[in-house]
Length: 72
Image (tube, rainbow, N blue to C red; front, side):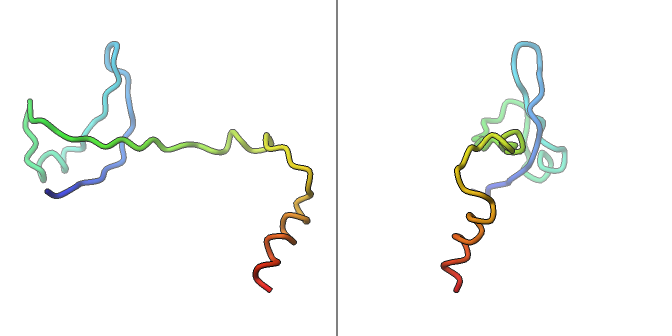
């Protein structure tokens, strides 16, 4: 069984959430209405909202110096 990976956006559809399968994939995989599909979901996380929230006791320079110790 061949596995196709696509990137798409979840959208509201009535009281549910739906994803759109691009036309090219539908034609390439010969997907028809009422076909059973196995879909693996992996959510992408935006980590930019964490910026500035991590509280550490070391300065950026101290962290940089520690990370370089293994490279010397």
